Image (cartoon, rainbow, N blue to C red; front, top):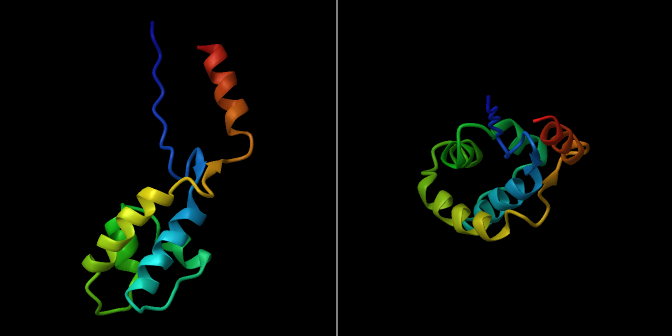
Length: 99
């Protein structure tokens, strides 16, 4: 019998928080809005980029232009600080060896 395992990379296997925060803050800064802390961005993550940006902009601000700035920036810079969490690579190797 074949075994398959599905993994969520973003935030599960890979620590992407700093690159996400950099992208959020770039987009906010570009539109003249205050930046968010790493702790704030961590609290805002979940349910996709549109939700992340909607939660990051000041109340009453249309998030669509900020999202339009965030998306290409994050695509181009999403691997600057992103890395596997400690121990993930060896854990994946152990799972691979077992199956």
